[in-house]
Length: 534
Image 1 (tube, rainbow, N blue to C red):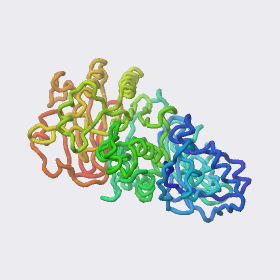
Image 2: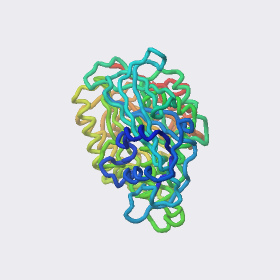
Image 3: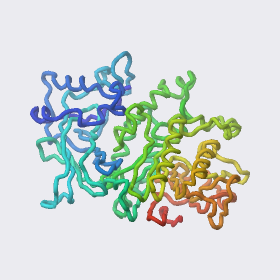
Image 4: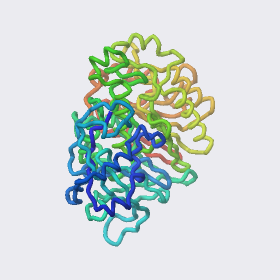
């Protein structure tokens, strides 16, 4: 299915275009640079620019419509993103591509008015803050973009744990993007005395302002941003228009401009309560296809969501042969490793769908159930072990849903959509941690729209003292929503859930915003919006 075109239309001198190339813009092959059929047909885009009578737009007619962003920092490189266009609008076409044509080729849809002219964009990374005489160019390049995609590059040749400024401009002109700021990661063996992260999740554009994004950027107290998913709440079949709408928010643009992000998705980037074969509102059945899916299949909706995410987020492709993979890891000196999971969309067993809760209750102990699939699960356990073996002081596990055993009511009911619905998977994780004596684990979670702090402990299997924390192998910080209305437990907080006849130590159901994480070699601290958690 073609994307609702981002209208990154074009306009430059032919000489400038001739010197640039499509290769520098990694989004042409998104979401898989090893499988061109999953990306844009670059040959057709290039041939389209040869049409007679096409008149390129002047630089004065173009704007950087959605700001700039950076993400996935490595010691020597970082991903940079922007969007250049004559308008904020995107094409609303939702035409399904048929036949042997490449999946996202605009030539297959007569309803899409694709521009024949690519835009040449230059990018530069430099030290200093953009003021005259203070800058020293470190890396630069140029590449082409078009109405088919936005603009994403990888800036290489940088120094570890260094703050840089970056900027885009239309080739051969003074039309510049906003000035961005980013930072690279330390080398694995670097001694890092401290590191701070702003952690977000569940930010719903229609139901609240993104003040938490803007306040975090203005306070300027963190090294990096971690986003645990539900970055958008999409109710369409393509996700591109939703992603575009969210990036119009000035607070989101400010935080994206000044910090490198380390993101993963949750379910609402796709649809509510996703698993390998569908969602709560769309499943692989004829009835669902005709009645609930607007004649869009589960596979098509997933492909569209993946494409929108990779095009609109500054994220690396973790596996060139697997476009659905966002699980990956980052080594931040000797201080910590970040292990980002996908417990929502990657080969997940069936979850609660609104009509099958009794069934999920019956099978939540089934040993074959998995939140992440065997391939990711093996990688996760191996990543924990390798992190310990290399001597990292802390392990931060970024996942979408609450890991600890949290009860939903006074009768001891548990959700089927978090780790409570996949008990064998949780037990396997805890067994691996305990058997290998892997300590100092910090699990991060979103999804619940509440702040939780819980000890990481294998209840009923390993000895544990709630008062002292003895027996725990780490702690879980589950953060609140960036914007969202109250959940069930907010409206009717039950005694067992609040007092915690389990491993929970703190709970805050009222605050909205972010979770701050500050790590030192011998201490970790977390603070939620408006309350110190631990």
